[in-house]
Amino acid sequence: MTVCILGAGAFGTALAVALSDRHDVRLWGRDGAALREMAQSRKSPRLPDVTLVENITVTCDAKMALQGADFILSAIPLQATHAALSELVPLFAGQPLIGCSKGVDLTTGLGGYSVLRSVYVAGPSGLLTGPSFAADIAGGLPTALTLAAAAQEDAGAWQAALSTETLRLYTSSDPIGAELGGALKNVIAIACGATIGAGLGQSARAALITRGQAEIMRYAVKLGAQPETLAGLSGFGDLCLTCTSQKSRNYQFGLALGRGQAFDKAVTVEGRATALALLPIMERLDIDMPITKAVAGLCSGAITVSQALAALMARPLRKEL
Ligand SMILES: NC(=O)C1=CN([C@@H]2O[C@H](COP(=O)(O)OP(=O)(O)OC[C@H]3O[C@@H](n4cnc5c(N)ncnc54)[C@H](OP(=O)(O)O)[C@@H]3O)[C@@H](O)[C@H]2O)C=CC1
Ligand SMILES: O=C(CO)COP(=O)(O)O
Image 1 (cartoon, rainbow, N blue to C red):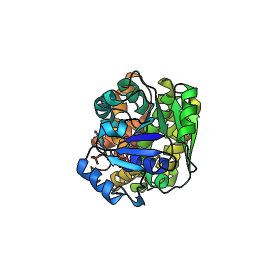
Image 2 (cartoon, rainbow, N blue to C red):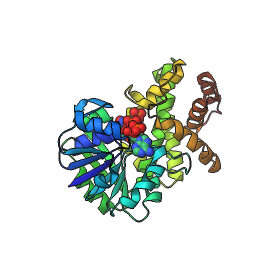
Image 3 (cartoon, rainbow, N blue to C red):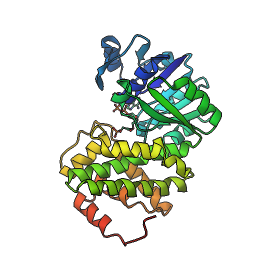
Image 4 (cartoon, rainbow, N blue to C red):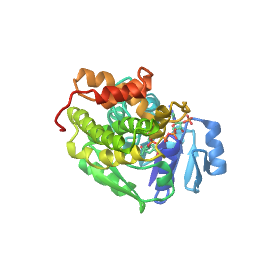
């Protein structure tokens, strides 16, 4: 089969490497000069340890990349996905479109799957998400992810086509739960990074992960997610990984906030925009999300880490669940 991957960053490239074991892959990006360099050197600046094998075609020609593709995967950062896909969808030919981005759109309030649905209205779409660093996938380390689609038979067929010896896919028929677990864990990872960066300790981080999971559940279930999805790879699994690993860019961004250090604005940190996107929605729907609110305050510069901590610790005492 032929798989077209949209977005030639770390994750799109990692998926290209993994899927090239079984399929011909076309890796599409927008920056012609950078893509030509990648095509020639067979190296990605974002994954320097990996070599792009021959059956990965690197291109900025969307028509060529999409022509005859059996699957389309999108690894474009979430805030750019709606605009980018709106231009590309007229070139699609009814193939399944599977989102791989994690976040909530600032303009529409939609998550990774829902953004796809809003742009690719007539076509089949799904979401691939879960605990996975690009470097791990590209390096052939064992990884397990959730492949979610509204129809279980779609998820099953796509699982069979896209699993590899090292990439183990589980199906889910709850794409809303999958998109929200993957998006909201990045916000909690920022809080965890800030906590460790500010020297508040690992006990505080464990509390944040647990109370973070409670507010992710509150939000996602209100928006129609199944609670079990939030306990799976796309929820709890990814929350664990991102909140505890220094490889996570969301966690690294939080660390910098906690230490009062600057952070490179060019690095993709999905949790920052996601926290800001969630603010008006949680207020409108009256969902209690104190950690997310604190992270939004930190990201906009409205509060400091000590103010965030003071606000969280001063909340009324309550029953745990
Ligand atoms: N890295 C990881 O470990 C994982 C990432 N993800 C998710 O994958 C998504 C992408 O992240 P990742 O690849 O790591 O990010 P990177 O920062 O490594 O790369 C982002 C890529 O997206 C491209 N891009 C940005 N805007 C557009 C656009 N409008 N049209 C086309 N391409 C665009 C960038 O192109 P340019 O260079 O030209 O700016 C760049 O190639 C995120 O939602 C992330 O949460 C999910 C799991 C793991
Ligand atoms: O989503 C990820 C791991 O599952 C990658 O996390 P970061 O975007 O924080 O690096």
